[in-house]
Amino acid sequence: MNTLLNKKKEPIDKLAAASGRSLGGEAIRRMLRSPVAITGGIITGLFLIVAIFAPLLEPKDPDVHYLGDQIRPNFIPGAQSGFPLGVDDFGRDFLSRLIAGAQQTLIVGVLATIVGVLIGVIIGGLAGAFGGWVDTVLMRLVDVMLSFPSLLLAISIAALFAQPSQWTVILAVSMIGVPIFARLLRGSMLSQRDADHVLAARSLGVKRGAIVFRHMLPNSLGPVIVQATLTLATSILEAAALSFLGLGDPDPSRAEWGLMLGKASHQFLDVRPELAYYPAIAIIIVALGFTLVGESLREALDPKNRR
Amino acid sequence: MLRFLVRRLLQAIPTLFILSILVFAWLRSLPGGPAAALLGDKATPEKIANLNHVLGLDQPIFVQYFGFLGRALTGDFGNSLVSTQPVMGEIVTFLPATIELGMTAMIIAIVIGIPAGYLSARYRGGPVDNVVIVLSLIGVAVPVFFLGYMMQDILAAPLGLPSQGRQAAGLDATAITNFAILDGIMTSEWDAVWDAIKHLILPACALATIPLAVITRITRASVLDVLNEDFIRTANSKGLTQQVVRTRHVLRNGLLPVVTTIGLQTGALLGGAVLTERVFNFRGLGFLLAEGIERRDYPRLQALLLFGAVVYVLVNMLVDISYGIIDPRVRVR
Image (cartoon, rainbow over all chains, first blue to last red; front, side, top):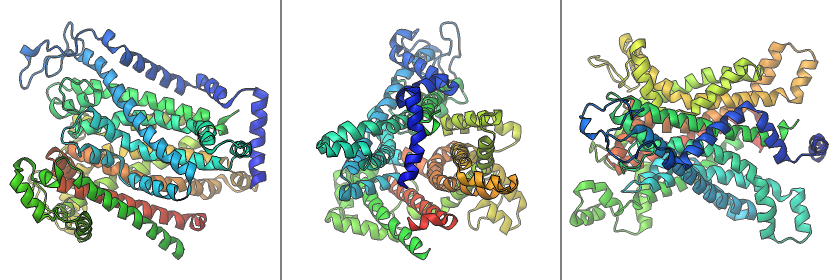
């Protein structure tokens, strides 16, 4: 077994020595050549710019009811001069709300992912670092979380709160990622416990905490980052699903793509379907962007693909 | 083989046990306590105290839990607040619709996904591969409920397919098992069979997208892995025909991870069913759950959450066991 491993490692080491680049450097170089990574990068880059500078980019105030007097129960005015994408059911400029929505969507996606990563990394890290009964108990818990189909898990958390809000959505969506990150980190920590660099650190007398935080965690982060990028995409989608089911933030002034899509799908498809199309297209493009980045990161960081 | 089977069955027990504790705790952590949640708008302090007594909520928590477990094992989850019928009865009535929908979706996903993934791997880097990859990436990025509405809007009328419900109004089909297709075949009501199939097509296609995308990508990745294996080179160099290498060596080994994926995707199906059944007014368990959320029907939600999780655990257990049958190496691990 050992000789087999060494045999497989040898050409990789040789190649790395010959090219003189680190795994990270190699990965970046490979991503710059991949059309998938570039497409994903451009989409996510644009999305981030719009989201961060949303208040500057909005042509109108997204909270002002402009054409309120023209709205009837079965009529919402369409696109017209000054309102390139039309207005929503309160007469608010839809383009401005989409731009404002980029920011809210990013906040929901990023916070849900961060919470999921943090809890998952703590659980997985503890399990992987201590092993033994800690590992058994924590992984049993993770197994049970995994035994809920993801949307049902989110629904069960979200339905617990009498008053849904942005925070309950974030919390509910983040729970989907927790078991995934916990498993990922535990596996990677376990595989490192007997790895050469950990053995070396241990024999030099490095303390356990330092080994975990300085040697094992940093070496496990690659897969976590890849998974986090992919989770960002699914978080946005799951948040939209929760909104559709009536578990989203009920605050009508909140512009978030999932909310806008959920509401429009329910109420305005016959009246003004664009109100559903625009946020849906925005969600699809952004989810695709993050997925492309995540997938190409995964491929680039995979040592098997080194050439 | 028997030892493997028994071990795998025993492994599911602690998971199911903790699951029951969590679902039990879930109802008890509701705002205002379970009695307030059960009574909904009609809650007054006296009614809450009264219901607490009736439900045994004034008893020690362990007594309550084992009472809950005992009732759950006999299928008693209380009455739905919406329909005031026993929840278990509702589940039994609505389950066939979801099974029909889920299985149709899964068949679509498998029948298209595996060949697509295999072709994609075989012609790696070619145009087929690129198209498959792009489509599978888009497939997971589209919100399922939005796709459902799109299909209703764009496809239903031109294809002459119904976009709502399970049965055409005015069709007098005999219900025996509540499996619409099966009932039609049993009673030879062929118009009912055809009607049921037509009602299944759009929701099943919407529901199939995510499993389809995932199965395609896993098949592709797994076949690519197998193509690099030593035994494929050996098989090729000892002069086996391409046909034999592809079916006996590549496909059989490449499909192993796909089996696991199919099991895991039942979870996505259960979640997706909530959204698709709501969009298409397809009266199955997902519809029941969506309605339960809107009306805050906690007994129904509790039963459905537990039911969904148990089904998911059992399906994955079956998948593991079948995996052990296909691949003998798994049994000894």
